[in-house]
Length: 323
Ligand code: BGC
Image (cartoon, rainbow, N blue to C red; front, side, top):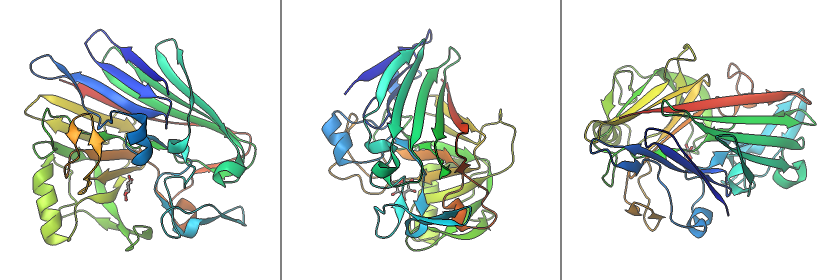
């Protein structure tokens, strides 16, 4: 396993590791000037292997594909399932399970991998490149580029879990999301196809909302905490789709992307997981995953995440720290 670190002139640094192209650290100074890692990170590769997805690269397709089945140009494909009959986050051999070839390219960290169709069961052999870049104005940009030798699906994300505070949970932090709607989900969390307005519900983060209050309202009114697919409003690429803020430490991270979804996930049960911050506790972090709508080929009006044969496609997400 290799770890790569880049530091800028403002005491901000990032680290990423070859296992799962994982974003291991985003160190941001607090009010006292002391940088702390705001990513929910783990102390060993063993721990990363035992607990999937934590700040790892997700692909080829983020989110759930109903029955692992979809069609491209009238041809039906079945890919490997890893959650009952559902394919979650690229299935059992997704990007997060790969050991990537890592290198520096100037100030960027670059991970590359050729993935055979026989390995992850998706159509097309693909070449994937994931790049982490830290700018001098404290912005991390992650880009995902792929090229396939057959038509395939490509909807990658970074499964980032943030905790901007120096404490053990995210309760003091607030979140703002540029989304009027979220996806209705079936019991197995696959989309029904319906989009629902956030108005007058605990799903509404259009104005900054304290996360603890939101979690409490969700529990009381909906019966569970957040594991939601927000449909991002049309926006300029330069406008954040979401901003997470910790008033106490003074840290904030604004997420920019031209993707049309942000998944928000506040895990209730992190029991038994060892993090660099200590033993896992409920709501130790909040996952914010910018991506395109999940299960796209199976829902009319969800757009397309097709990666046509021979074409190169790049998706980017950036995270700007202020402190
Ligand atoms: C999904 C959750 C899932 C989690 C796994 C999130 O993107 O929305 O349902 O449990 O990933 O880490």
